[in-house]
Length: 336
Image (cartoon, rainbow, N blue to C red):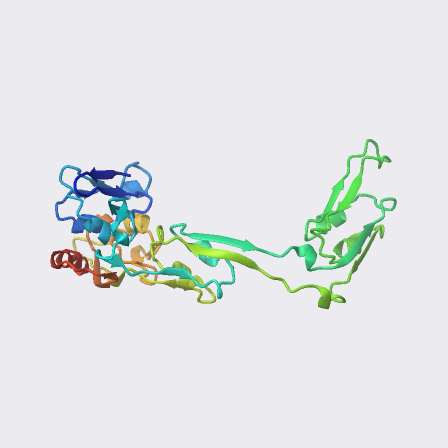
């Protein structure tokens, strides 16, 4: 992380958050003073080198804010007198979205399990099982021989047996207990007991009208600060409760030649740096699933064969009022 500060009529601070950076190089491409440099993103992504993905020269940086504006991942932030330019109406802003409809979400947790950037906060509150089943169970300690058949067969792990006799006839130190918070009154213990020492009754069906309907509550929240807008969550959501807007539209292709071909398994640099888990190796070749790709270009930058080409046809960066800024930012739409 770095901070570059300049005092004057205004107090400007450019902050870099490495944890948000994906190594795409967009900031480097738009910097008008060539102050930003991209580090060796493949060794960094593989954990071989510990350093920031992007560095900045404080000697040449003019703190114009182009890099902060262009970064879709909030890795760079320019503040003027303590206010981020992304919060100012006169600066460009990304019109992207990553939201969850609380009324539609069923708290299944599938989005949480697939998020490649750990941007989803998920909490689920399940009803207490003891409130959903009714019954009675009793074990006659005099008849029990502590064989542990019931405990071994119990599907809910509700039976606990201690069997530590001092001699073959000693049962003083033995004990058997049923955890009623786990018992589902299925009757398996009763059926396997060789001594008929267990009495069990399940009344769940008989009193089903008295048992409240199970209610599952929770919260699913997407952190826009760390979200990479890959759309894994929206694609996997079974009830279409998640809306994701990607920063770019376009394509990403593998353009090989006789001299340059994809090395697949022997290289996999693109797979290692992709923040979206959108790349896989199929039949020895790198394949990108555009359903999950955000067209950031990190894989293009990392490819040692220089055969990956991203062509962005549109972007969700709006409110570009400066003609010079518009010219620079629109270079992001040129195929690379």
